Length: 262
Image (tube, rainbow, N blue to C red):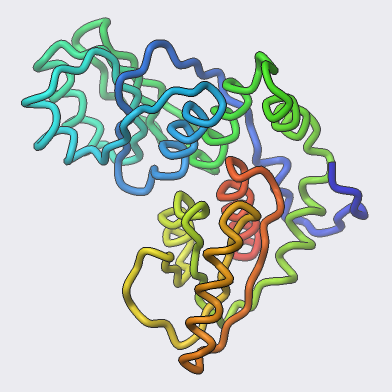
């Protein structure tokens, strides 16, 4: 783990982390509501890179309006945080008798009519992050590869998490917007929910300046972005989140949460 001094800050990210009792049976499709990209793409990426399974990931309205009426699907895992979206998704799944496991961030009284679908209501605080960490813990639990073992070891020992977050937070300039590298993209909507000015590699708007946040695996692309922006006279700094690429968007989300809440 991270060999840092004990944090004295009153804001404890570690105390907010809760590993949830979740499981993933056969999955044909991952669906996410507004703001729930972080756990959705964490699940999709983990299935791909840890379990060699490529699973499509759709936002709720692409699923309901474009995909669901025309493509046969048996098992859906969904993440929602809005009751209207939850109700619409439930209606769409039930109309075609599709099996589904829905993880909903927040309290809800909505219940499925059929036992083909489960709705798991979760504490809204830190929900996106706790879901994402729990997904990685569940999918790494068999420890079939060295990478799974490393991820699981890190998740099983979060004793230095507060110090890690606090020390990384010192690197960020609150006056500069954040530009996310491709691997960091799943964190975008969570950062936006915190009121952070954030864009990504795939956005076309030209920033006056930016803090580019990246991982080791997309370092080459990041260097190219830095060169391009600096050549246009933009103020650019860069921050490497040096953890496993599956964990990097989650750790960035925790760092930004700390900066906003401390």
